[in-house]
Length: 92
Image (cartoon, rainbow, N blue to C red; front, top):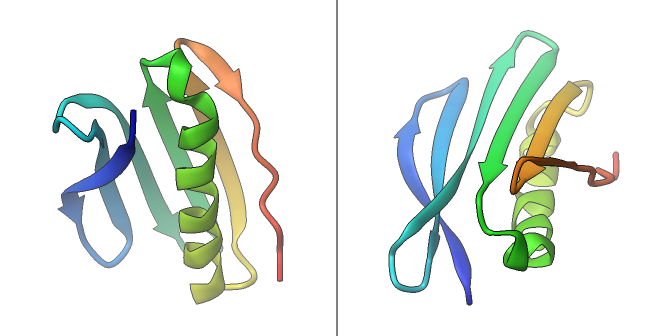
């Protein structure tokens, strides 16, 4: 099953993105808020079977956001099926 972002809310300092399947079923969300030098990221995905695809979708997106402000401190909580998921973000 393929998963994609579907924008729900976007402004200069915050976004809420639905995570949807190729059948346009919402299975989770990703939200973030940038406030001065910190970025707060929260995400929940209900389908455990797409955990690796989820990481592959979220990681480059967040790394792209970090390029906007390289000095951002990222505070992140990502969960799949109610379990915390860790990803390593490369600071370039």
